[in-house]
Image (cartoon, rainbow, N blue to C red; front, top):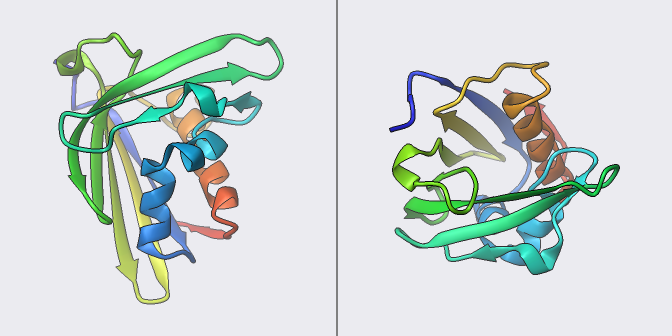
Length: 153
């Protein structure tokens, strides 16, 4: 079982509708455009999303500088459109019961929408060059994909 005492949370307040944010997380065409940190791409043909409880997702990130590939995947635990999504996160063949878990909460705040990203099972902090920074950069890419500016929460 992943150590849920480890983890971190990143919050963005977006000028985007909850449904648009939800679609960016659950539509393979959209996910391919942002689901990666800086200097990495996610080729569309590698993205598979079955966003339902027990459904799986998989994608492969490719480092644009080294061509190194990072196969990624997991199993959806909670799918409550357009407000809550949780899924295991790791290599596609990892045991879901031993994998870190991502929870995404999308909350309308009047004119803005709060996106709360929480990763449990691994440590991370700003400047770590690893889990935190990778997801922070991916969320920046999500903001750009949505054509929005974000207010860091």
